[in-house]
Length: 319
Ligand code: AMP
Ligand code: MG
Image: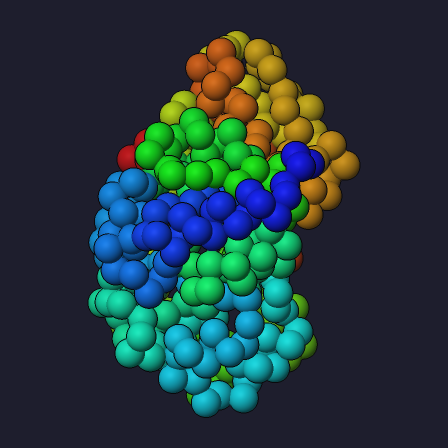
């Protein structure tokens, strides 16, 4: 991991305080951060990412005092979740307080809050003295960054990048909201339904049936490499795959391919999550014509991995 010293973090914190953008590592992916309480700085995030204004940002905190500042939270279940999962890759959507600018939440009365588990991220938030709004540090719709070099490749106007090496989780946080009878998952991540059920029951409410709790970030096409990607199925076997790359979850391709990359050579889902975006970045830069990804089992973390793969492949689906 590259050397990060406190002076680099101090420099980044000064920039955040001055309304600038800083890319920084979290345990999930690199974030593009700005002072969450400064609407002008937050507007720069949307501009730099070319992110549509209807897609709300997650606000990153380092203490429960910041949670209390940002939310109208009186729900004791939130503190139980925080005790178990924070710092960590869980975002909780809660009623926002007046201090949160509307641009952060895309005009919604709710705000997504997370306390990241990465020491550099926590120190940056602490030294900035403000909560940090940060989406993933990539162009909208493209592959999320798990290394500082991935940020440099996609975003040219970032004021500063804190390089903390490769991220350890590799996919974005699990996003949940709370309903009277329990939690609803708005985005799948490494913290699974089963993990959450150790604290709270899952709500019987589904997102589709409730406009109030629907997540505007539920966009079908996302995380897309610049090369076409398909999920392995019977059709792929009829394609001319001579110049294709195979993104494997342990199996070898049963057809001719140019190259094979492994998400995990032993079929380990945690390892596959760590490698997913990293492999997609390297394959989009390789000389293959397209990518065929082997599906992973849809259980536990595999649900979040398949969510990302389906969205990456969505725009290349034949209708
Ligand atoms: P990203 O910043 O790319 O990790 O995406 C953040 C995602 O979190 C959004 O696309 C939404 O799906 C979700 N999210 C953030 N804030 C809210 C909110 N207030 N209500 C519902 N979903 C949210
Ligand atoms: Mg993102």
